[in-house]
Length: 355
Ligand SMILES: Cc1cc2nc3c(=O)[nH]c(=O)nc-3n(C[C@H](O)[C@H](O)[C@H](O)COP(=O)(O)OP(=O)(O)OC[C@H]3O[C@@H](n4cnc5c(N)ncnc54)[C@H](O)[C@@H]3O)c2cc1C
Image 1 (cartoon, rainbow, N blue to C red):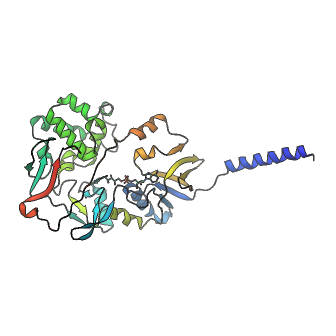
Image 2: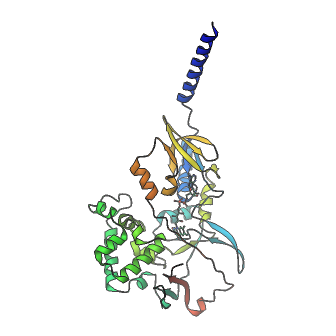
Image 3: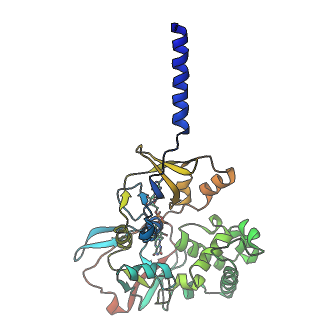
């Protein structure tokens, strides 16, 4: 064999070897990879891990050094020693049927949010501070007939947008084309309407009515199981009725005890479909394979992942712009005693002042 022939054969062998590697079907290592260790991701992993008889293998990949995501409880020094404080989600209500069921199943206790007495509000930027009473914010927001009508109409529309089938209503496509502000403009954009909707959107989404799709808003209200009324009440029928005794993050941590494979510091950057499985790659360099992948991360975070084959332009654009990116700040004040209760104050303050 001449040197030339040998080189050619070697090249051919190498080519075949490379080709073989690229078509080799490596078996999936897990049945399911869950991306994101927040409430959604850990719920998915926890529920799948219950199917012990089927031996479903699950891996959770979480970007941060802790589980919980927006359920975030931190230990901080308070007036009476160190205590746990929720810097993310904190309230649960009776219409959050599934969360309430999970808390019960995992033996996690809750306590009622104290809401008795006067609440304080400042409804304009430089306005005076006044008191309001009652079950929730709604009575104080809806001062005028205009606002009352606007909110009654919105509540009725919300009943038509099922969270599981938001496009089913004949008007859904129209609502999908307009913001909450567009809708209110059409319905009569009075100053009171603007202030009330601004406040509602700020409380619920940390952003302005111009930023929120009307269809999403209606679906959100419906998914609260009682609309705006449920969302703005803080009595035992409202969304803010109870707090989790050891903080919201404790729910996620309790679920994690049933999920054997959880990896922190694993930010997923690429999801590639290869033959009958999906390959998931992290920024830290791991590549894991599974039969199915569940993305349990906010849509704008999913937009940062490289998908192979790529998502359609519409889907990629939807992920990037799906949810308005609001900004919120949370302050924690602690006092040695609950002095406000003896003064008939609920300890609740509402203000539209700009920061
Ligand atoms: C200040 C605040 C107050 C709130 N108050 C309430 C309340 O009182 N009641 C209520 O019901 N809800 C409340 N919420 C909303 C609630 O906290 C969220 O709806 C819920 O925690 C969302 O959970 P999730 O798992 O869907 O998303 P997330 O909690 O956002 O979890 C997503 C997880 O995915 C991880 N991740 C992101 N990208 C990647 C990646 N590429 N690879 C791997 N991991 C990744 C993130 O680190 C995160 O841990 C509040 C939220 C905030 C911010």
